Length: 193
Image (cartoon, rainbow, N blue to C red):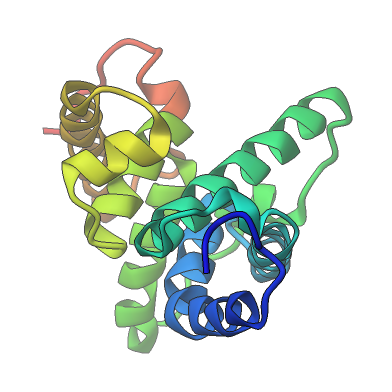
């Protein structure tokens, strides 16, 4: 069965196998990009819909995972482009103003602090960090997915880890307000030491 006949029954089996194999990691990546469940579900569903519509583009079945992650990232970038043209206010943008929670929720707060710090981070640093640590992609795979050089991946990962440490340190000493990591990198260095 060659790539000339993309609408065979084998493709339906391949599609079902792709969904069962890659839905969870793809959804996790979508959530890390979007920051909410609804958008993550939509991104994941749109990616699988494109796999069905464009299955002829995937000639090498061993590259399905890479194709899915690349497609999801491109869909996300398309959404961001539209969002810039038609901005809207998300309720999640004021979550940092909520009151402190009780001590018995410290573990949850730590996990949430890490997630929030990650979501505040500029996308060019957040995406490689998520792909490397949460999705366990290699430097080469990340470079291929994002279409950037391996050296750039390594540099962005290094900067992302530094930004994450700065943000978590600021949160742990109880700073009332921390600049989002995307803005912090553009402002003068802060002294949280």
